[in-house]
Length: 299
Image 1: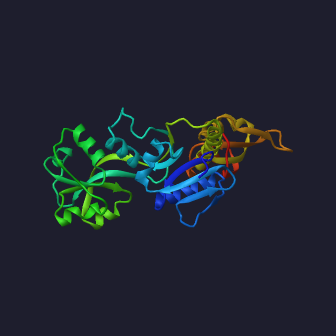
Image 2: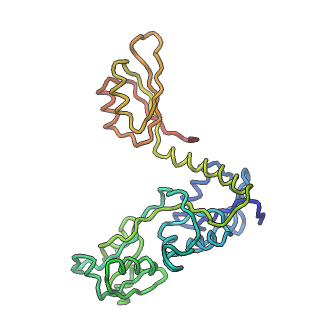
Image 3: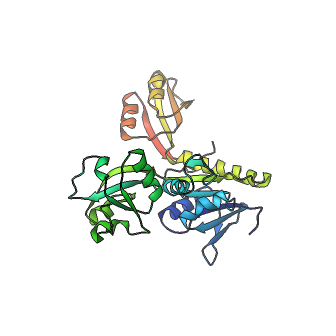
C-alpha cells in the first residue's frame, strides 16, 4: 500500500457501507474494486479505501493506519468507553462531519408485558447488550444498579432464552423489537454516521488531498437538502418573497424583458422547501415557481 495515498477506513458490508460508498461516489471518486473486496483504489485521486469491521475503524484511526474513517457514533463512543472514557487518549479521532445517514438510536428495550415506569425500573435487572461501555455509562449516570450481560449479536432473543430481563441494542424502525415481543423504553444515544480524522500528524501532501476531498464532501452534504428556486414576481412583492424563501441569504433578481414591473427571482435555499412554502410564495404574488434539486455544490 502506497503510504503517500490518503487512506479511508469504511465498514466492509451493510447499510453503513452502502451509504459510505454512495457519499464517496457523490464526491466524484472513481473507485476500482479489488478481487478480495478488502481494499479499493480510487483512480482519480490518490486515495485508498480500507474495508474493515466497523469496530476496527476507531483503532485504525487512532493508530494512524487510516487517515479518515466513516463510522457510527455508537461504535466510536463504545470504543472510547472501552479505552478509558472521555478525556483519555481514546480513539485519538477528530469528528469532522456528522454525515446525516445511517441514523438509528441505541435504546433499552423490555418485554411488552413488563411494567415499566422510569429508568429506575431497570434496577436489579440483567440487561444484554453488545454495547457494555455505553450501557454502563448510562446506568452509572442514573445511579442504577443492574447487571450487564455482554453478547455478540442476536441480543433481541436474550429475554426469550432467559439470558436477560432486558436488552440494549440499536433500533432503526423497531420492527425487530416488535417481532421479539419487546418495546423500547429508554434512548441512551442518538446515532448516525460520522466522518472522523486521525489525530496523528499527516504529511503536507496527504493534507492537501484530504482538504480537496473534504471540500467535495462538504459540497455533497450542503446540496443534500439545498434546492434551487426560480420564480417570477412583481417588483412590489419582492420584500415579502425574500422573507418567504427558506434559508436564502441573497436571491438573484433579474428584470423580465418586456415588463417594467416584473422580475425573475433565483435563489439557493438551504432548507427544505415544502408545498406550504410554494403556496405562501404564490399568495405573495409569485408565479411560474420552479424548484429543482442541486446535484453538485462547491461552498
